[in-house]
Length: 341
Image (cartoon, rainbow, N blue to C red):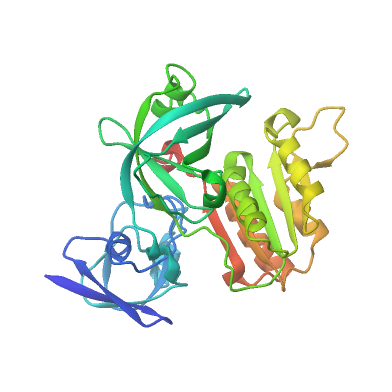
């Protein structure tokens, strides 16, 4: 038995098998719904159920509260249709143009850029054409089938058969403990991708706010490289929030890009600055609000800790007139986040 899910306002439909959630069925059929973690933890796939009935699998209340569910909102990553359904969602039609592939990759370099941040360079198979949008992510497939997600930090136009990832050490984390411990150059890993609906909307000429916290800088870096590679001149400002100056692990790169590209400004923001720091301090999204109190004509691309992304979405829409549909986000959801730890 299958059910039909229709996405409005696009009017596109796809089939969902019995006991299957909406999102994986949509991905399989090339229907580009927005999503992030795919595990009911981040809320990026939140949509409105206009018609029909669903049953939700396990998810976190911060992603979909009981009040939101009662008002008709659903998480497509864990909502299983019980009837034909109609949902309202901002559809990203171009996600499906690149196939999702499984492939081996070889570790080329492991570079410590901060005490708890490693920049990993991976060599792709020579016979494999791997296409992705700047801003999307891959999943490492561990030996027991568990998965860990990381965004590409390099634009596809500059990749040249390699892929750059920024890995933050999560003590006790199976994968990151390995990266910061036993991992060696030339090690073979298995990955699958690309995934995600976080990438630049090129049908708009609006000025862009690029908002990152921590290693959420990785996909933002890829977006900047993509814009540079295509000769774009959309006005953009990069706000990068970290705890200390040492956590700005590619500060020199950001400074150099802002010097080279006349359309790009760079504003680093520290929440726990040292005495020598003379730059901006506090919450990174508050710096955006102070500089740009009217965002009615902007797009915002935010990536980083879920708490930052949620606060930015709430405050920029409510207090700075940012249109809700112009906020694009990828919350970095760790395994601890997914399990409510």
